[in-house]
Amino acid sequence: MVTMKIITICGSMRYTKEMLSVAEKIELEGNVVLLPLYNSFQKKKIYTKAQYKVLEAVHKERIKLAETILVVNIDNYIGESTNKEIEFAKKLGKEIIYYTDLEK
Image (cartoon, rainbow, N blue to C red; front, side, top):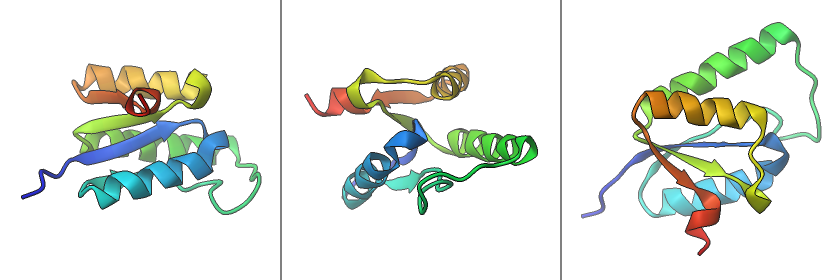
């Protein structure tokens, strides 16, 4: 029997394609995957400050729901928003996995 985890994917939206690819891979391993989808279907969308606050709050809820966060840190890049997400996950006692560690 497969042991399922609920995993929230975090990372810079500049790596949306990579995040979607990682999500597919870990879902095929039997995990439940939560990830942001904004900016996923277009090159660049500009949101208002109020909309960004909503998106940030929703992503925090994804982190709360998850057992683990998986940080997609292509070329070891972790931006300011992702650092905040990591700190939030640490405060909640979540397991944190880095994509670059999975590649080794």
